[in-house]
Image (cartoon, rainbow, N blue to C red; front, top):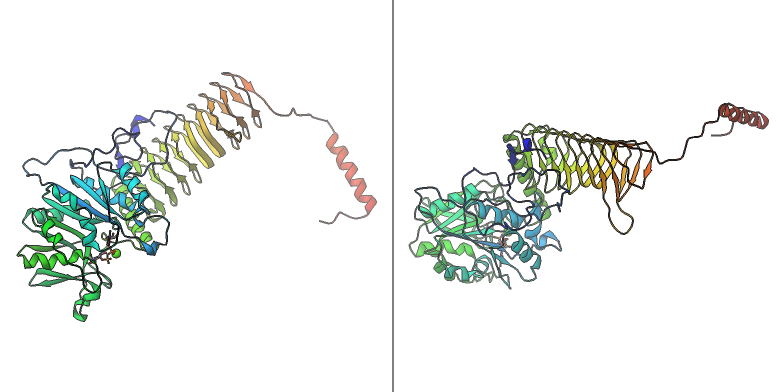
Length: 524
Ligand code: UD1
Ligand code: CA
């Protein structure tokens, strides 16, 4: 990718102000940088490694504090032990993806972006996939097992060991509520900084059934009533508990430990903390969030709703950063998609994880991109498929029905129609004719095709790898190339044309005679 693609790369991941943040657990600096926060690095035509990304949350990097502000330390406990029965899935619920990133990744990402010092995740039994994901995405976060599902307070207390180390703020987040923003977490923490001990995130639910209702008296939050325990008048309240909560490190642990089992349901309700705190003379407040932001995912339908919300946010961020989306609702982005300024994305384009696009590119309709670096000034599609490791340099054209996988396409090179380029490199300015195929697989192993600069590959050529085509070489149309071609050579590898003057007339005459003998024209 060219250097020109570097400056204005829009980061869609977690739309947030460019303020220095505290990062939790050095976000895996030592690893090959796939899908990391990353300012797009100009990748100069190196044979791209790219797996389609390990799907790590985009996490902030810097570790500075705003001058003047006394820094409050924070612990986040993310509840992720729920079984997610309604998902009807072999995959743990929090591993289902939104914007190509597991829901848990979104929550880890917002925690890190908010400068939270310690992250604990409460996982269920048999949650190996979740543990592995945490270890990879945020090695500094600790996982705690909640063996029995005895309620939200019980889940928080599964991580009680974390309370041994003091924190000013304790945030309780849900792994299945992926859209909570950094701004909201900061509002909750501000309330703690002002002296609150319990801060509840509330929202106005169009249909409050099933949610805990916030019971207020004279503007004070006195209790949260769960659906089962609510009176008819309480059920009419539409101000609901989003689940996210912030507790002061001073009062929180003691209050949590004092929560008793709910007699009717036999569970430990985190929501009981509100009444307990009031009884203990602590300050309890509610902070209101947008209902869309606190959408909790319990079913596939809600997963689709969360996806729609997330996409809407990402598209807006892309457009705000200078990307033209002609029909935004039809363009799908991923958590780590980066698109440069003045790039135009036509309707119906899919971008899976690991896509970086430079400035001033045009992505035509119906293109499917994943794990691809696309430099500025390129033209992709319509109907292009760029698979992981596709690395398209400045000014290159990838046209309709062209598939590129693990291949670098040099500056200004063109593959305009009906081509497969896999495990290959194409030098600058080369032209790949329609119907060209790099035959990279022999049934046992993959092999590379190396095409130099300024090469002309005639239509319908098969390049049987491993094979090298030197700079400036010319491959005649319809060739099957099995041996290396040296620079500036012409290679023709096809059956020789035989011309028989007058033979066509003779054939025609013979057929006409036959038809006359039969006496009619052959039936269609
Ligand atoms: C909870 C709140 C309710 C709120 C709603 C918002 C309580 C008692 N109720 O209800 O006031 O309106 O969320 O969505 O807190 N979890 C565990 N272990 C458990 C139980 C739950 O890890 O033993 C996790 C779940 O994975 C989930 C979260 O906690 O991420 C919420 O649990 P869930 O059972 O969905 O709570 P609700 O009944 O919806
Ligand atoms: Ca729920």
